[in-house]
Image 1 (tube, one colour):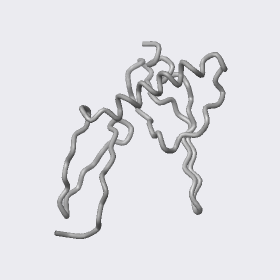
Image 2 (tube, rainbow, N blue to C red):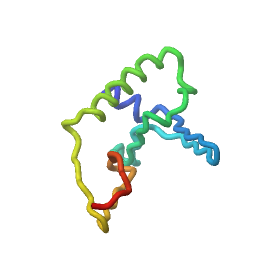
Image 3 (tube, rainbow, N blue to C red):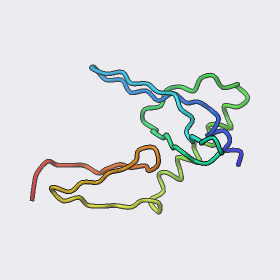
Image 4 (cartoon, helix red, strand yellow):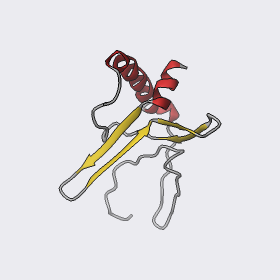
Length: 109
């Protein structure tokens, strides 16, 4: 409950920089609707910026919550693999379902 509270009330900055783009957004990792129900999930361990706007006394607890969440996200027990064939399409609501992919060779066959 304490970790959930931190992840649903602490704004994090997610940033991606490359030579042509700079994308930045601030969200709580766990987004709640007006009734306090889960509405969105924002997680990207590669594109997060330094934590700011958090009281120094709360930083260790926040990062404990983040590490716990990361362990759950990276647990293979929670993965579902779907092999797409050429011409296949999968539609994912990015705010509700995490997704990733393995390497793509670009070769058919």
